[in-house]
Length: 323
Image (cartoon, rainbow, N blue to C red; front, side, top):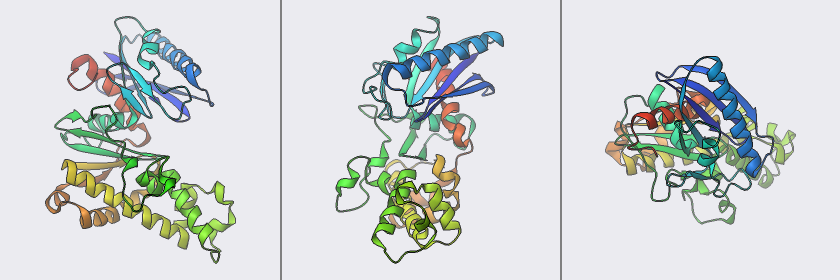
């Protein structure tokens, strides 16, 4: 038994053939290249055909396709909302994939945050956990949540969009497009905070001043932090504070066994796990915070793709928590 897993990201589409025990039999990717609307749908259809052809070449029968999107997956309709793709406010993604596979091949769609925690549950740091959260910090912020072995989706399939958490007062208009938490502590947020500090501190002459402000990235901030740069230190202290408050809130609401940190930012921010825990202890329910474990993703950038593969396998065996 084998399935296709697909990870539709902000700039590229990745896909692989997975055996039922999690072995990645084949993997490939292609760039979105600023496609919009049906052009992205056509790209996905052609990519699925490509993977199906590869499976035929390898003499591997495919029974299901799982795909994740960076946004909202509406389980009742199979449609999706993906803010990074113009024209995908209510796009019939499930239907588009069904058009290019055999009628007996099942197709399932979910959010990238749900797939991240499913991947870690299958082959990574969340293996064996019934109550666990994946805190994804990349360009944006989201949380994949499993409670009592079930994905938490919410009434409108939007649960886990914690980048919108209000963690500071007063409200400022700059939070309106992405949320307070994401503004301060996502990859893009870290760059924004550094730019603001530089703009307001005319005496600053450090490393980050040598680069045009609108070109500063989170990677630049982490590099400057390693060199002892004052703005980078202040920026990342702010991020740690917000990550700690988020952990405290997740712990107090859900009482998980583990919170797993992943996403591109935590390739560099792994050094702050202990600091995040100390910050979280200030705010969290005191018994729960002593019991939870904070860990890094074991799958890294592959967590979402692996989760998409697992989602496809799971829909063959048990549809109790996956549409």
